Image (cartoon, rainbow, N blue to C red; front, side):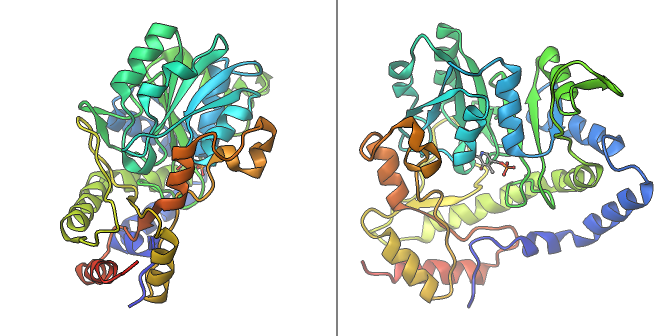
Length: 366
Ligand SMILES: *Cc1c(COP(=O)(O)O)cnc(C)c1O
């Protein structure tokens, strides 16, 4: 049996006719940028998140750097971010000239909120709460600390479409929520796409102007903006995807529950879910201390694909050599990079396929 780590064709096949009908509708409409589909999607996505506004953008990275730009976070400022985050999270900070200050992850693979206060300096302007793997950061602690120190909070919800912390959907808790609709994300587009959510009318208004060359009225430019528009085709297709998001999340939740129940190999540590939160199970990430690479190689030999999210922590990346960090600065993040493995998990995964993955993993001997 050949099993991919993520098989997007399966999810497509579940509702192919709906995507194809919507694609043709948009193609035949004669209107391709900033129109009805984008407006409708923005309304629908804001409603799902529980924020007042959503502004469609071209990617998740754009959402991040535009969020920090709108919050006035730039050169000389520091932003606190988890040391095991995705590199794009850090780029969202540094594109504006700000400096990332890393905080170690907790046992839920997200920022350890108890370590934030020690990282605050007079230059700290914001906290970037990255909800990795479909889990949620401890937003209660993060918001409490941010309010006490006058910091802005940006949520990176690229991997967390529709999951909750304390009954609230992530992306509605901080000042701005940033979403990527890269094809592998929970509500994935058929190309690059993203958005930000906020309940602040001023931020929403400035984001709309910024994404379109800083222009509200054609050929009148208020600020130096960007071209970061969600297009009509992606917005239309995302509207179809959004109608299935709850079912997609529920299906991955069932897949996760089966992994939880049936994986018995003692060398593997299963994901822990933060009390008061749920997971949209963007990834099912296990820790394999001392045997991750051996397990991945063994599974590959058995026809099972896996992915490492992520093998190099941002502070060890060549791109961030200029920050001057060295191995040992964030030992937990470095250890996680050596032991995490994302198991196959996708909408449309069959019982037989998952059974084969489970049986194969349980038969592994380190
Ligand atoms: C995917 C992702 C991004 C970047 O999104 P793009 O749409 O690829 O630019 C940012 N942060 C996290 C956590 C992601 O998973």
